[in-house]
Length: 326
Ligand code: CP
Image (cartoon, rainbow, N blue to C red; front, side, top):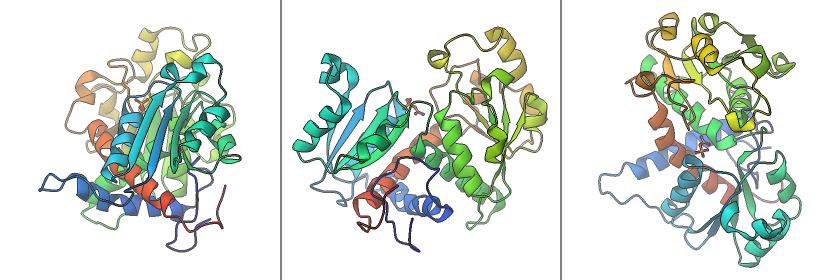
């Protein structure tokens, strides 16, 4: 747990175990790093992690998260190593523990890991010395995605309300799409609940986990109901690669009932924010013209992601040890 205004965790594995204060500490640390990437001088670097070695270990495909972590590390002046499953010796049967032990033998300070296996990053914290950041593990969590999403929501709610202290308390967020297979949904639910938002999930019944209401969310399969009164309409990717069998009758049926498009958005308030974590299946869960419209925050989420990841790396690398741990 965090003491007041002091970050004490060594690792970032999930949002579930964070307190509201810890989530807010990351969100409140990010603006100074946003300012770095927007500097008029064009010099987008600070020396906060100079001399530290950060390894990005991606065992699953990624565009945004991998590049964002790499860029965040470089902007903090750290040295970086980035490698993927296809180019590492895990292809030859080496275990993840052995891979990490070998990386640590080269004196890494911080390891960012994306794994197809839920729980893999947490397991690695038990026997390795580096700070570990979960960059997405199976269906479990994608904590930095939820942090950048809630940061982006809060930033826009503050603009809309012309109040730079506004919080997400009472803000209504509709999460629409493949909830069952989504670590992004799970991390966002944890983060939004901690920050006081109200959440409605919308998907075909087959894409909603059993008993998810226990997390304190509303659930519907009616898109109109989900959109009504939503401050944020957040579309989730249909994860074809994670579905063992087709969980809805056809894509055409899914699009008719669940796509976020100009027609369905008529049910949402005119100023509802539109978000998606990427990668987008264009014209399936999100219509192309909506993804690209001026209400869409999709690319702003990506920009904010670098600042959030700089904030996370900075806090972990300078955490007050050793009173922490999940
Ligand atoms: N949002 C997200 O995690 O995207 P990538 O899979 O491209 O990293």
